[in-house]
Length: 269
Ligand SMILES: [Zn+2]
Ligand SMILES: [Zn+2]
Image (cartoon, rainbow, N blue to C red; front, side, top):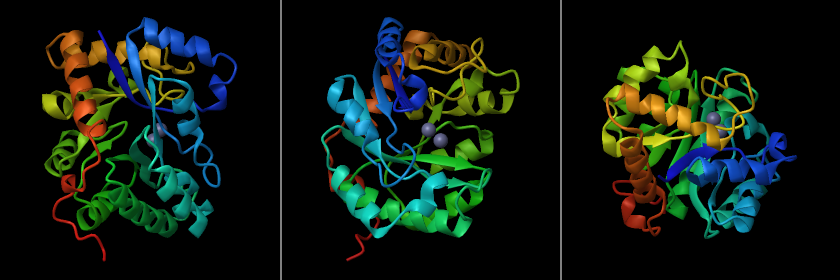
């Protein structure tokens, strides 16, 4: 069985001491493809995931500026993202979006940086991976106006109505450790109604470890717990969920970059 972790932060300092062992445990658990998010601590360092992907065959990368770091963006940041985004192992753009929970960057700056990055993602013909926290309506409004390409709502923690809204806009939903939490009933409802061809798995490691590891450092090998719970919730087998989530990831992120994926949006020229 091959499992794809569609979102994790292996560049995090918490993996510095035992990185190789973490990758080995992932492989032992069947997690053989890992999309590393390249946001790091924000600009000017934007290539952390690319550097990992260059060293490890099973690792793929994203580039982007997390909403937390939006206030660090300069014109040079956008130029760097446009260049780094062409790297052959970059298969998605993000994580980008809005985070009104922490408000580490002013909201109007978050929105402006988000909109600019949607433009860059479109130029690069990359799918986006979205971070949305306590900012659902604003995010959806911006996407409606500025995006019509493919993408992932990462760490989906909304309810069934929000799931339907995002699915209706063409997005994939990635479910992580939260589906195993006792308090995760709402998210499990959303996972239940997500069609087979829109479902993805993720860990968001080192964050959000699934039960029974909750509170510990999360790592990709732990995704087996999330996979098993998702299979149970959907009334199917872990093998089936692993198979469809792999296929979805391949269709979404591993296709050649063709501008025709992006229909209905002017190129701004
Ligand atoms: Zn996130
Ligand atoms: Zn993340």
